[in-house]
Amino acid sequence: MYILSSDDMIKKISEIKDLPTLPVITFEVNKMLANDRITVDRLSQTIEKDQVIVSKLLKLVNSSFFGVRSRVSSVQEAVVRLGFNSVRNVVLSVSVFESLTIDDAGMDFNIQDFWTHSVAVAITSRYLSEKARMQDPDDCFVGGLLHDIGLIIMARYFPDILSAIMHKVMEKRISIYQAEHETIPLRHNKIAEIMAKRWQLPPALCDTLKYHHTPNKYAVNPELLTLIHLGDIIVRRNFPSSFNPVREKVDPVLSSVAPSLEKKLDHLFQTSVNWFPDVMDVIRDACEFFIHTKEHDHHE
Ligand SMILES: [Fe+2]
Ligand SMILES: [Fe+2]
Image (cartoon, rainbow, N blue to C red; front, side):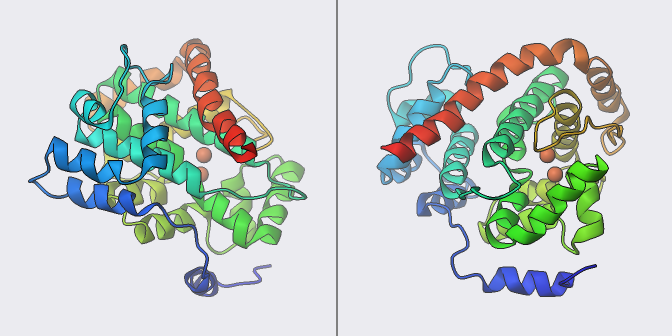
């Protein structure tokens, strides 16, 4: 019972005048990272143009779950200590978090549970990356944080469709992705890709959002994609909420990475019940930072 075709939906999204935008400096920072002649001074000066981002960035890098031991007191110092790529990822994380707000009152979609899931996948994917020594852990953090943003776009612009999906999730005890299959021509992963491209995010990240339910070796970065895919499944298995009320039963697809890495990831998957409680402590700290700080800011 599709009300819209997938083309209709793409067209509707492209016609939305007030689609969420990211702060201008996010684009500038991404552009600089794509350029070889980037320097610490130039990157720091660019970020310093946006004082809101600066204060959030320093708060994040000094937070308990971020993993920097001694205090970082300036953007310059953050760039020197963390490196260009990590700082870009921090900027991206705080920007997206600021930009994607919705009012979920009266909806069958709990925004706090959504962000909790996103933060959980960010932390879990980062952990998998560190344990398997695969990819940059910070790239995994951002990938995890953003992987389901298509749902926020749906909540904001297609709330009736999302309500119907969430009803189906509850009623049939299936995952959102399965419920979408029966309800909507354009699922959240595709909507996330449209947004990521519009925001000019790095191609590997756009692709990761698009394929996080169906990893494959033709993706721009199959390793990054597989880490997010696995992080998502582990969270959905071990950490149910109103957002995913049913413990996930499907097994992850790990065959898009080299056999030695596949083995490591499979071991991490099989043992996840043992290590997930430790990761859960970090997730709680990170939620405290992202979700509660956000609520606090909004009351100011
Ligand atoms: Fe998803
Ligand atoms: Fe997810």
